[in-house]
Length: 93
Image (cartoon, rainbow, N blue to C red; front, side, top):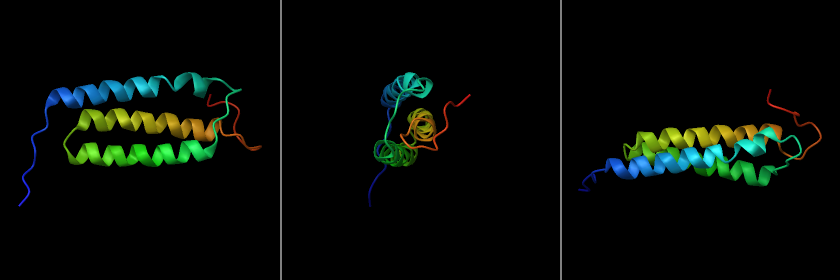
């Protein structure tokens, strides 16, 4: 039978910090109405981040899962407001 490996708090903290930094680095893309990011970039990124959330949650790394959730929110905003199609919204606010 497989035993559950203990999760160290410092790894969860490091992944959390990295997740929040990566989400924050996307703010200029969301705010710039001239930026265009194709859906072929945003959709796979959203799917992978959701898989990360599930993985972190299964390891009881809840701080990391929350940070990745903010990354998903940023990528969804980019997909909605910065994809290069004619019906895209111009600004999130």
